[in-house]
Amino acid sequence: MESKPDEVLEALDSLLVVLGEATQRNQVAARRARTIRRLRSHGRSYREIFRRVEGTLNLGITAENVDTLLEANGRLQGAEVRALFGEGLSAEEIATLLGMTQKRTCEVLRNISGSDGGTA
Image (spheres, rainbow, N blue to C red):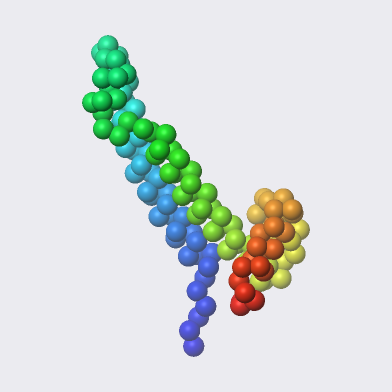
């Protein structure tokens, strides 16, 4: 008999991957920022710096980190809510346990019931 996959653990694994990728992107952004600061401290113009330093748009790195972390967090949150609901907890109990508002918990539960097509 096959055991059902643990959705929470799968979501945690995905979050760990996203966190690792974000860490790598942050390291690149930090190196770029230090390079820009160093060049500027040596009197270089921003025009020259931005022409010279490849990929100076740290804002893009930040946006990518935010987007991927929000997506992974949403997946984990949904998995946690589903797991707790499946164990018989009420929306109020889930909200308290996960530090969410009851309104948000109910929204997640509505999305779950509306998106899984009734399969459990």
